[in-house]
Length: 168
Image 1 (spheres, rainbow, N blue to C red):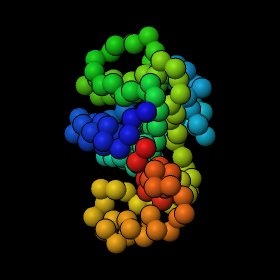
Image 2: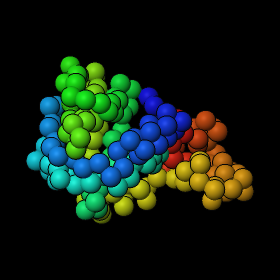
Image 3: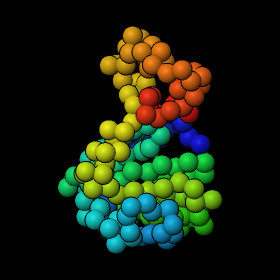
């Protein structure tokens, strides 16, 4: 499963490549990777500009010009691949972009998920996650408090996304 370093790198690379790109068309090839969103709902991002791509916990979040957010959790075999029209055999969702590029979510085992939550659903998901390890607000004192605030094993506490987001 991609952990914090991998998802951070993916999000940064995609942000540099996709910021200000416009989604022209959405094609859902495998609806079973969608969570809380139908193929019809996912079409909301068509004709929207991508304003940023960032990581939250182990997810890659794409923000759009009308406020929508697409949350991608790649899990074990998922990948976001950017390029020309490729029609890869394990493509699940394709976003056709201006300029002829495509962003494909490819997942051989289809364990990953894509969600297009409402603002309220996104806020609830985000609020349920702990602080980010890369956030400057996570001081050594706060980190120590997270560890001391539990009687569980250190590894178990570190993997608890409610206590510390993104660590696996």
